[in-house]
Image (tube, rainbow over all chains, first blue to last red; front, side):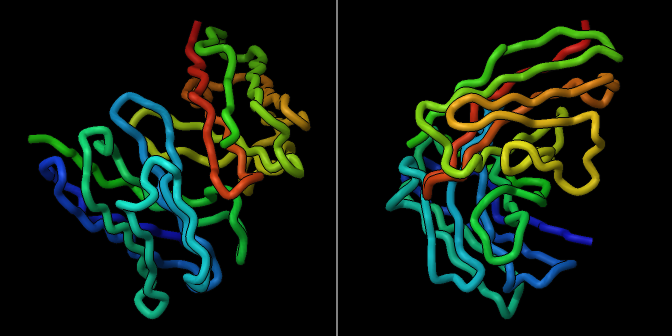
Length: 121
Length: 108
C-alpha cells in the first residue's frame, strides 16, 4: 500500500532554515508528481509546491516562492522541501502528498501523516 | 490566482439527511479541474471527487459532485457519522493550485 512518511519538522527561529523529507513506498515513485501542502494550526489547507515525476518542472505558491525549494531523489524514493528565511506565518503541519495520477499535476490522492514546523523566537 | 469561496461556513444537519456544499471560483476553472476533500479531526484530508464529478477510488456513491465554470457543488446523501468533518474544494486548472477555506459539517 502507498505510504508517505515525512520527517524534519521542529522548532526554528525566524530567519532560520529547515529541510523536510518525505520517504515514499508502495508505488513506482518515479512515475508520480509530488506535492507539499501545509495547514496552519486550526486553519485551512494551503498548497505549497509541486515537483514533476522526473524533477524537471517545479511550481510554487506565491507565498513561498524564493525561500522554499522542492527537490526529489528518485533513486531513494524521497522528496524534499528546503525552507529558508522562515517566518512565523510558515508555522504549520506540512503534508507530503502524491498526485492522484501518473505523470500528472492534479489532485492529492495520498497523504502522509504530516510534520509540524514551528517558527518562533 | 483563482480564489475559491465555499459556503456555507458551517452546516448543521442530522445523520440520514442530505448535505449540499458550494464552491465558487473567482474565474472559470479550466476543464472542470475541481476536486473535493474531507478532513476529519486529527487526520490528513482524503480525496473524494476529482474533475468536478468523478469519485475517487473507494468513495461511495453517496458522494456526488457537479458544476462547471465558476460554480461547483458537493452533495452527500444519507449522512453517516463519519461524514461530519470539514470539506475543502481545490482547483488545479492553473499552475497555482488553490483551496477553498472549508465548510464544517456538524451534527445538529
